[in-house]
Length: 153
Image (cartoon, rainbow, N blue to C red; front, side, top):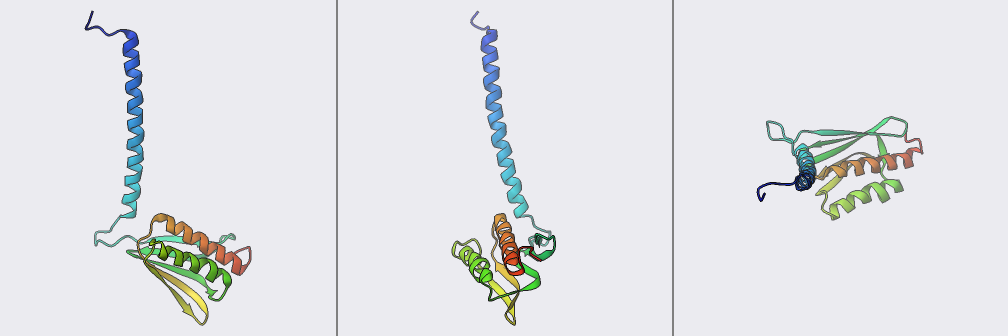
């Protein structure tokens, strides 16, 4: 009788084995998710340049107020209308955010394109994480709504 396994032992073994496999499957799914996310960030064309990504920044009224375009290690923000450079929301919020990101090492640097006291665009150098785009989009929407009124244009 030493070679026989009782039904209770078999049930217990199978339940434990299934639980271990579920935990392993959960770990593998999380790992796959991370690898897919990293692969999407590092996706390159045949020429070796990063594929441009574009994010349209939309006001609360549904108007496109800016495009955030990424190509390689450079991000360009192109506004559909200029922003007054001297407005407190621009200096105290948008440019402060970019300064903080430089200080934290999230981006290398940035340059504001300005003409006659109005911001026409912003160029950002670096290869920031995906979260940067959402933060930048939200900052632009906030500044736009502060300058243009709560409707945001």
